[in-house]
Image (tube, rainbow over all chains, first blue to last red; front, side, top):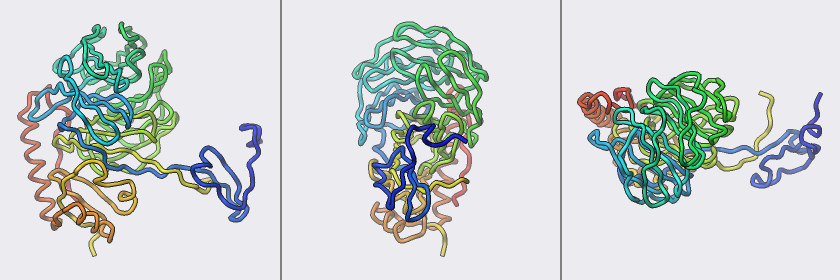
Length: 309
Length: 95
């Protein structure tokens, strides 16, 4: 049988009292007082963040909780929005409008270097880039479509799926290149990750992993989601809401999904941003009825007893 | 004693509800600024601290129903390519 030391190069230490949770992250130890193995896990909950200046749904996303970006979407009453808002971890501030208003499009990147591509009305093929201040038009994608998902960065982007489409394209900051298609075309779903490591999930329960060259079917999402939001990365991703009033949250560890605490405000068609499960937020969407509400996923380290179940 | 308190309160943004609030009591937001709150002391204090107005379950459900009916009518009136998300707003039954 493989030992802990053979895997990690260290023995499991024995202690009479637990170290502080913040110091024990990533460790496992044996508590001689309680005769139990201990480690550190996270206790998560959604907390309210600053609300968007303008409530909208089917909007774009980029960035992280401390420097997030929201753009476009459907505003009331069914109007296409070109608004851009930046989040600083507390509140949203308006910025310059998009070159063209969009909804149901792919986007990602950072607050100072984001991209947006494809989208509705119709099946758009245009792209545009944000530099932290203004949007400029970029080159067109190869396969125009609406409701694809985007991940990655402005210089290493990835878009995939869309209505009636399984097409995948990479972006190098200048040119879009068609690459291997998804196994199952889909729309109104979510994704998280980078150009070389992305996970796509939703529009039912199916999951697909992208390794930089091809898509592989993964284990099913723990709930059926439609127009869900995504955040994080391929090995630490969140699926957030998805469906009228759906508040469910699930975390993907690169292999399987686990259920986590629910949103306070269930929604679909919202934006998700963040780099991991400990850096994730959701904003906007349909409650139903457009909402401006932002929620942040907050995890606090806590000592936990290891069990075999 | 009922499991939940019902009330209206306007989400004011950051810290309207905190992580600790979510651990202390059940909280679920719905159209019409309706909140369903776990019926314990901390839940009741939270609603009061947000200048919330307590409603009966029937009153809260009526507010939600009115909002959903309006959203359904608005969704029905949209051209097909603007019906986004593509799922028509569904009725919500408060717990």
